[in-house]
Amino acid sequence: MLETLANAPAASPLAPPSPPASTPVLRVLHVEDSEVDHLRMQALVRQAGLPAEWTRVETLADFAAALDQDWDAVVCDYQLPEHSGLDMLRHLRASGRVLPFVLVSGEIGEDVAVAAMREGASDYLLKSRLARLGPALQQAVKAAEAERSRRAADAALRESTRRLQELTAHLQQHIEAERAALARELHDDVGSGLTALKYELGWLQRHLEDAPLRERTERAIETLNAAIEASRRLMENLRPPILQEGLAAALQWLVQDFERRHGLTVLCAGLDQELELPEALALVAYRFVQEALHNVAKHAQASQVQLELQCASGVLGVEVHDDGRGMEANEVDKPGRFGLRGLQERAASVGGWVDLSTRPGRGVHLVLSIPLDGRWEPGHPSDAAWLGEGA
Figure 1 (cartoon, helix red, strand yellow):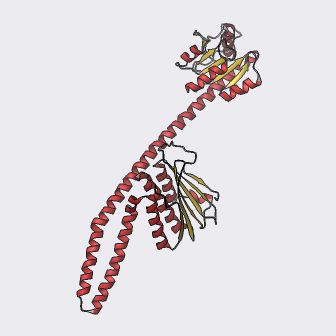
Figure 2: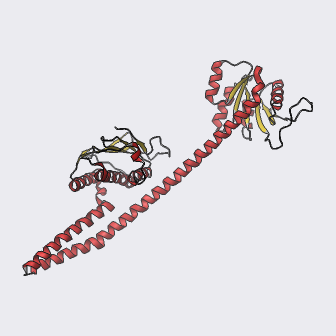
Figure 3: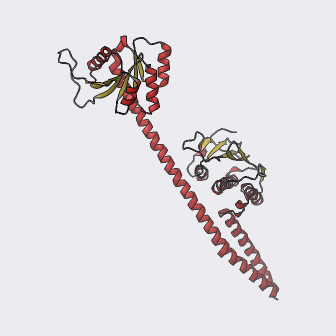
C-alpha cells in the first residue's frame, strides 16, 4: 500500500515560520504500519521547519517496489507485521542505493541498535523521543550526500586509473614494437655492414706487405670488433632474441652479461624452471630485472645481488635484492626516479605490481608480482607499494 501526503505549513499562529522557498522538499519513504505514527512523525518534522513529502508503505514487497523511485531518506519502524526494520535495511543495502536510513521503534534493545548501525543504519530513535527526528533526518541526508559524492569520486578515480593503465599498456606495446624495429634495422643494416667491413679489412690486412700499415689495419679491426660487439649488445637490449628460449634462459644470459660487464656477483635461484608464459608477461619480467640490475650498477654501490624467480599460487614472482647502500624513505619518490616509476607502470600494464623495501646500509629489495590467471582490478592493496622499511 502506498500513501502520499505533502507537509503543508500549519495555519495556526503557533506554527513555525515557513522555510524559504529555496529550501528543497525532502522525499521521505516511510515504512510504517501505523497511520497514527505516520501522521505524528510528519507533524514533528514539520514543526522542526523541515519541508518533506512522505510516502508510506507497510510491506517488504511495497518497499522494494518503491525503491525504483527517487528518495532522499527512509524512515522505518523496527516492528512490522511480516518483517523487521533490519530486513528492510538489508534489502536497501543489497539494492546498492545510497539512502539515509533512520530506524524508529517503540522499544529497541541495545543489541538491536548496535546491529542496525553495523548494517548501515544512519540513526535509530525511540518513538518516545522523536523530538530529534527532524535534525536526525537532516544529518542523515547530509551524510548520504557525502557518501554519494565519495562513491562518485572513487568511481571517477577508478575509471581514470583504468584509462591510464590502458594508455600505459598501449605505450609499452608501442615502445617494444619500436625497439623490435630498431633491433631489426641494426641487425640488417648496421650489423651486416660492419661485418662486411670487417671481412674487407681482414682481406686487406692479409695482402698488405707494409708492416706499419698492417698494424694500423689490425687496430682498425679491433675497433670494428668493439663496434660490432656494441651493436650486438644494443640489439639484445632492444629486443632480446633469447626470450624465445624462455624467461629463465633469458635471465641467465642477462645475469652473465651483467656480471661480465660490472664485475658483480649475482646469486640466482629458480632459473632452472621451464615456464610457459605469454610473451608480453615474460617481456615485462625481463625488463624488470634488466632495469633493476641497471639501477644496482648505477646507484647501489653493491658487491652482490640476489635474483630469484618463482611461480606459486598462480602468481609469478621475481625478486632482486642487493647489498648496497640502500635509500632513505624520502629518496624513493624523489623527482627524477623514473626508473622506479617505470617499473611500476610496466608491471601494471600486465596486471602486476611492484613492492620495494629499503633502509640505509641494507640495500634495496624489489619484488615483481604478476597474477597468471589474468584477473586483476585497479587499486590492488599492494599495487606499486613503496615501503621505507628494511626487509
